[in-house]
Length: 498
Image (cartoon, rainbow, N blue to C red):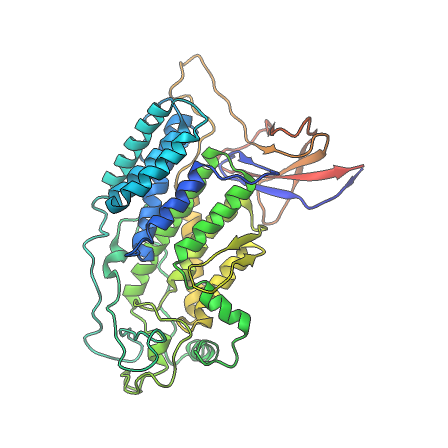
């Protein structure tokens, strides 16, 4: 016998069971309402990424807790009242009620979306599911009612201008010649918003940006001056596309990548509910952590640094340097886009691995869809886009991506999760045992070797069993060997041919 083909690796945390190989790509109520949610946040007047990511997370939590109350598979985020009925209806109603609460002007459209979802229900009585969904939505809305996200506080600029201090930035290149307008810094309070999972807002605050007289700073400044200028001669055509493609709000990119990966695998409802809860919690908490750092360090943007006099003032009508992309009106360090996307995508990697091709779209007019061959390439392009666009330094990007990775790891370790062994509601004489494993969907008669590992770094795969799929229907393979639920396991299926 010989082994052929590329192994399909399935990440399993807390010994949870994740689906494996699938042949068809189908959306479900969770992915449907994720798309409805992110779209709802961008209906005029569109919410910025801070405000939108908060609502994305609230919706995803409501959906997860509603589905979990019926399917009873995981550790609740907050709401948990076991019930029966349609988990699909519970998910749709939960998402609908969250969005109607925050966007009452969109109720007619949201009601129509809910009717469409309910018409496709296939998993049980709708009424009970709707009741659970409404209760879950009301619970998380109440929990977040006083989380510090309002009232909004705008930053009006420094009392004294000194080199390195953040100043309000001009609306270049939206306006090509002076006079320019200078909007206040957005959401100064966001770094004090109550996190969804993080222990504190400054838990992963990076160290300060490099000193202005350091080689790190001068090299990064020269790089952005060269490659990020609107009239750059060193930026390639593809780099220009990257700069403009990824300038859309970062939470849109993270959520689309998650939808693409989830739909392509046909993940079941429970896994989708958990995936989007964790992705959107990580994204929202990363935004909070980033804003803590931004308004702590109040570091200036390249458009200011590259036009400033030695005393820090700008008196040249921003004629020395103009960026390719409009500079967002908030402090520079660290990069908000970079930490946001990394937080969400690192969570996604934990579910599906890095080797995933995703086709992404953008709200930037005229930019075609973009194919990322791996999730790491997506993260890299998103980070580099801010340097190519002339609005961030390279050290902003790296600091923010580390922060995003740290947030993702913490949310995966401390957020909602699958629960495998529970006897809390069972009679004392009854024992319940559950096992991790994978579900394969493929061609009947195909043989696979199933391997497991306790770590991917280094990868030490151990053969678990050989299986031949009896049919094309989903086939559950359980791992009944001794394991520690807290340690977690990874699985892969390797195709075998004679």
